[in-house]
Length: 235
Ligand SMILES: [Zn+2]
Image (cartoon, protein in one colour):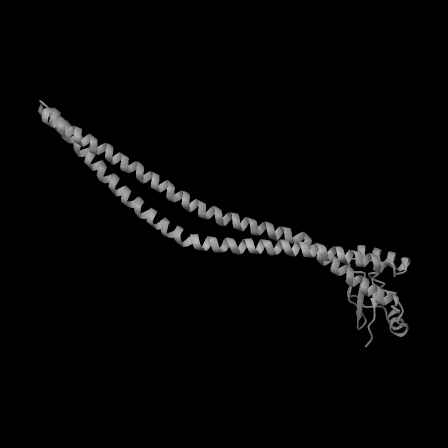
């Protein structure tokens, strides 16, 4: 037959496990959430890179069209030059032509810079593409594992709660209600092992009289400081 002390110890063991499982059930969804966020950020970063490339390519196209416009303008100026009558008109057209040519040169420089930038980003995109794919798979796998762990933890908790329900039927009701009260008051731990002459629940020294009784009688005592059940395991 199990004595009261053994029963309390076993009950405390079940309850500590239940508390741990409950904590896990609370923290796992948070971990899953963080992984989902990490995945989103990864995809966002890659999408942004692709958008940046698209944006620069559109800008380059725009500048190429601008060059076309200025080239057309130069052709028109050239044909006008043949028809001008005054020197003033001639000079004005030449100035206009020079300005168009200068602008084209500037645009060409800008296009070259854009091409370099696009090249660089595309290089980065290529490198990131494989990495993102791999990392994404890793994160998705980690999420699946966490979800499975959560399910398993819930099952285990259900099982333990049933086990507890059965077990408390074997504990004296008065003892059980005292156990429950102390557990509530003392952060989940109603049972404390005695180490030398100290209660390991509150780390206070047990008065010598109580301690010697405890050692001698092996009966159930509670700590005068924290009310936890004292478990003396002998020397
Ligand atoms: Zn104590």
